Each structure stands twice: as C-alpha cells, then as structure tokens.
Length: 302
Ligand SMILES: NC(=O)c1ccc[n+]([C@@H]2O[C@H](COP(=O)([O-])OP(=O)(O)OC[C@H]3O[C@@H](n4cnc5c(N)ncnc54)[C@H](OP(=O)(O)O)[C@@H]3O)[C@@H](O)[C@H]2O)c1
Image (tube, rainbow, N blue to C red):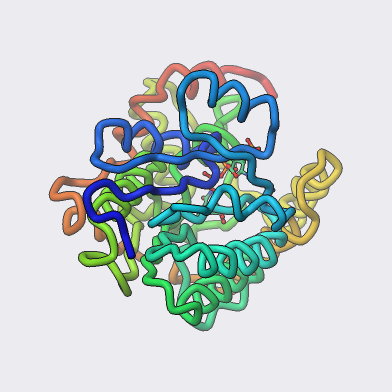
C-alpha cells in the first residue's frame, strides 16, 4: 500500500544526464526522494549532507533490498550496456518483493517490431515490467539533443552525419526529466499503463548544420559519412571501454537508418504538452543555450 501523502520515490542513475535533472526537479515536490550510488564514498558524502542515499549496484542484486525497502515508486534508468537486461529483470523482481507500486522506465523511441538490438532490449524490459503486475509508465525518448553537444559536436566548421539525408527526432533530456518528475509525483492513479512518446522535432544532417550556422553565426557545413566511417568511430569507442554489445548495436542503428528499417526515428510524436501543459524545448532553443560550446568546438581544427 502506497504512502499517499508523501510517497517515497527511488531514483536510479541520479548522477547521469536525465537523473541529475530529475533529482533537481523533484526538490520542491511532495515526495521523499531516495537516490542511489554504486560508489561507497559518494553514498557516505550524500548521507552526511542529509540526503536519503543508499548504496546500489545494478550489477549486484544483493544491494537492492536495503535501497528498495519502504519505496513506493521507482524511476528505472539503466546505462548504455547490454547489462540493462539482467539489471532490469533483477531490479523489477526485487521491487516486487519490496511492495513497490509504480515503475517509470526510460526506454527508446521504437516501433513494436524493431530489429535493432539496443531497442529490442528496452522492449523486452518493458514487457517484463508489465508482466510483474506492478503499475508501469514507459517513457520513449527519441535522440537526446545532448548528442549535438557531445558525440556529434561540429569540428572544423563541419557537422558530420552518418545517415545521409535521413531525419531523426530530438528531445531535450531536461524535458524527459520534467516528464518523469510529473509522472512520479502524480503516481500510478494518473499515469499507470501509459506510453509517453518524446520526439519533438525531426531533422537531417544538413538541417542541423543550418540551424547550428544560424545560432552560432558561423558557416557550418554538413559532411555525409557512411557506415564504414561510423564503424571506425565505434571501434574507437570500444577501445575506450564502451560496452561491446551496445556499441555494435549502434552500427546496426546506422545500417537500419540507411536501409529504411528505422525510418520511424524521423517521426514527431510529442506528448509533452499533454503531460506538462507547456511546449517542449525546440532544437534551436537548445543549440542557442549551448552556443559557446558549439562555437568553441566548430572553430577547432579536429
Ligand atoms: N542518448 C540518447 O539519445 C538516448 C535516446 C533514447 C534512450 N536512451 C536511454 O537513456 C538511458 C541512459 O540515460 P542517461 O543518458 O541519462 O544515462 P547516463 O548519463 O549515462 O547515466 C547513467 C546513470 O546510471 C548509473 N549507473 C550505470 N551503471 C550502474 C550500475 N551498475 N549500478 C548503479 N548505477 C549505475 C550511472 O552512475 P555512475 O555515476 O556510477 O556511473 C549514472 O548515474 C539508456 O537506457 C539509453 O538506452 C538514450
């Protein structure tokens, strides 16, 4: 039975892109926020600061019970790894034992019959959550706008795309966090059994380069590279420690973008106004907020 007055929400991934913004968003809301970390010293530091923080390592289910005891609602976020399958399965089982009544999961923006591995993993996790009997809400974000200011920053006045003229839909991670916050605060009474689709605007590489040019005042051109160059990029990621399975799924993503099987990535489906009662952040707005980063990077030779 939920504590209806002040439910306890457990936030996974609170040091990450979405999670850190979600925790800030929840600061003034009528819920008890519990965060977790897989770093013992961080847990000690947070507890010393008066925060409700528990040690939890998604790769070690022995750590789940103490973190889940007394929790009403869980924000389930996993990182960029195939480990998400076992992590989520074991976490959902533990949530069931602990009497959790609502799971809000961050998945992907996909058609039901997707054949991209990373997307398929998220769908299997969603089905597992549904089968658990715990009330669920699935968030389906398309590509984070943050990709434009990290992996795909322009260099040497050039924005590089690997999927030719295909379009992709974008969403600001701050909006994903805002939706998660609203759903966790309102709870299952309002949001159980709902899929929320988060794809605000759709652009191809040339259009992104044009937007970047307008926002920065620089002339940023678009360079189209292909699957071979993308594979080289991914091999470098793997050499730098990225999860091999996840990285390989990215190659499949580009292959399927090019052959059309992932054409649904270009769809705009924006549930934000329905959930938050305000417009979602636009790509131009996001780029303008990050103008200095874009200019500095675009002016670098390599
Ligand atoms: N990027 C996109 O365009 C995109 C689009 C759609 C969906 N997604 C989905 O978004 C999710 C990632 O979100 P994000 O970018 O916010 O993640 P992120 O910034 O990479 O952060 C991952 C978080 O998970 C924590 N974590 C990782 N492994 C853990 C473990 N073994 N035990 C406990 N905590 C662990 C990290 O904690 P530490 O500080 O300890 O590392 C960190 O707080 C993925 O599931 C991805 O599929 C991404």
